[in-house]
Image (cartoon, rainbow, N blue to C red; front, side):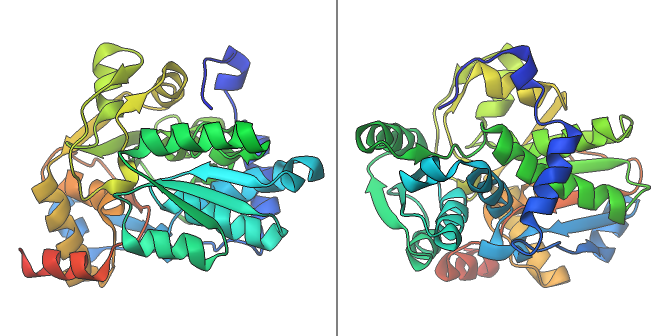
Length: 329
């Protein structure tokens, strides 16, 4: 449950918390490759690298934050059981963490969640609850259920422990590419971009440009930047289902604004093109949310100024949908 907190909480996680998260996650998540992309480098006029979180456990970066948050719970909090709301990837991460910690887990998803993600949640042993409507409806149902059952709710992007787990991606980028000048990050609720941005700031990499990317049909954070605060926007069908959500609260807005002033929007057509080109040129299977940074380059929304990293945040896309996109349907 996200509410307005103190400024001290809003500045978390600190760098030490992110290093602690990495130690906590050692042996539980992968250190994913940073792969040079020849075609994107040629297109952008500078060296472009892909941070392949689509090759992470559960095929999504979300497992980093989920594992760290669950590891930080007290035994009593875990004993009460875990509950999460998710468009799919956070739910898989919490489900896997729950299984490895031996904790009963329930995940609420909107009925539009991709089949691959729903099956992944159940494969990791969690109870799946589908909710009519959009992500916010699933979140409301999960919070109500957690209160009723006394279970521990694991927020997908508002928990400092979750953000610290996502921040370990920033540590890996900084170590693997010390000369990095820019990072383009998919943005939904802001947990990933906040974690990566905190690392760059704390390591004295303030000159590293952090850019958030969203789809036009999943643009709540972009809208919050336009109005300067909490906002609710209509949400349409989108290939970037992992970024879907029609509301941004004030705390999420402030955290994200603390690491970047740039959120760019890309079209659904550009996302589809990015998915196709990643597969065609790099052999990478990316879901819509994971392809959004590439779409930002293809559509000219971001001009890179030096060696840059695009975070390919996930690869959970239904096979039939992928085939349709590759055919150009």
